[in-house]
Image 1 (tube, rainbow, N blue to C red):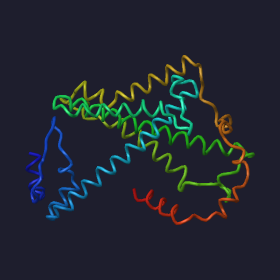
Image 2 (spheres, helix red, strand yellow; image 1 turned 180 degrees about the vertical axis):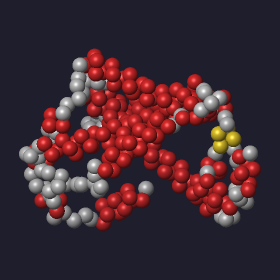
Image 3 (cartoon, rainbow, N blue to C red; image 1 turned 30 degrees about the vertical axis):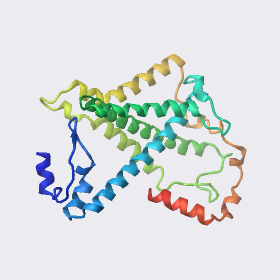
Image 4 (cartoon, rainbow, N blue to C red; image 1 turned 90 degrees about the vertical axis):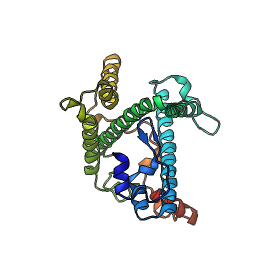
Amino acid sequence: MLNEIIAVNGGNNCDTNLLTWGGFSNGNQSPWVIAIQNASLCEFSGIVNGFLVYFALTAGTSQLYASSRTLYYLSIQGKAPEIFSTCSKRGVPYMSVLFTGSIGALAYLSVQNNTALVFERLLSICATTGLIVWSGMCLSFIRFYHGLKFRPDIISRNDENYPYRSPFQPYLAYFGMIGAIILVLSSGFVVFTKGNWSTVYFFSCYGSLILFILCYVCYKILKRTKIHRLDQVDLDSGRREIDRIIWEEDRHYSSNFKEILAKLATLIF
């Protein structure tokens, strides 16, 4: 059925190999590639596939950076083994990088046809976990946004000298938090429909949410921590004294050509 749909939309206009492996298909069946093949732009469809691979690699490297630094700071706070706080002479937490990077070896599960489904379930769990992380980041910003108003000794976010103000806040943060929660809760809604219950699919969609709730509750019970009021939020730990002054140097700084190109590349990719 899937190949028939691709053929109707012009996906067979080019000589491509539509590989099916473990019930999943390759990038030649991407809607973007099919649309380009429909216009008989076969060489360009291959270029688009290359860009998709590049985007996937850049997303992977950014996630490696974020996950390794998260593990590093958890180790510093005593919430993860101390070995993950080990750094090189240049300040790179290489033990955290090696550990988080080794998780990527699970991708080799997709080499075997009978284990590709297992890898797909792991991807589903990771995707849901990422949405939980994003909702937590938005919630942290919302608390920071409102908690900053209780600290008159810190430069106000409404001050023209405030280093950076993301637009449309805190409304975008609320949108991101609520949207991520809705996506997490609705990710496996199919299993709740009549005749479609699947225990494996349920845990692949909601397993990370269940684990998050268990870890959060257990940590609160064991460590006896509490949620602080906004006027008690710690906005001082790790903040440099320079953050207390007016950042005049940024107002008179002009970027060079190399930095401008770097910023442009960041916006594009």
